Image (tube, rainbow, N blue to C red; front, top):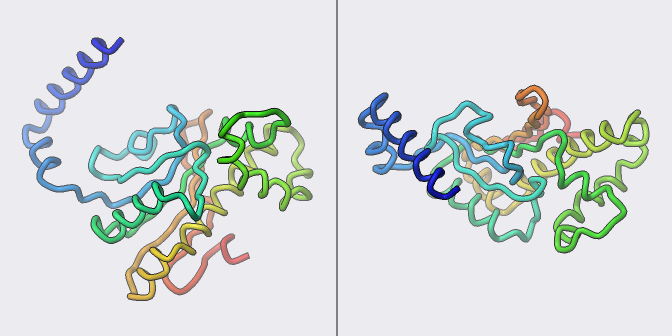
Length: 205
């Protein structure tokens, strides 16, 4: 399988060079992404593919269920690098419907270390229990919870000292919440964007 992977890479590299001879030299010279993407580790949701972007156009951090933990040094380091070094001005928190992490957070069974990681989602489920109870099916409830997790992620990113300091110096950074549909391949805007000095849409509620 590893040999097949290497051969696939060679075919992709050769095809890319044939299509655009200067592509890799430009990528090697400088990294200038327009977006910082905080997404789920799910193999079906690769950031640049679902967003229709080329390598080099999006800086990515992924974890199980795209949870934004305020003490996650991995995420915070990537966020700081994106904002301070790469000068990224568009930050996206992206979840997806049919998320296995969200499902695990709603199940009454042990999942090892994942149970600790997914605790913020269980907290959200308790906080929005009345709203979630209005959903007709378990799948609908989990998908609604996946949306709430994205909105919460946007809020948590916006409240980090990294973003607060950037906004204090009037950096025009926007944080957005999107969700991806595995069944149709579409990204949807959850209307919870935030920007310097104010909150927009659902984030203001």
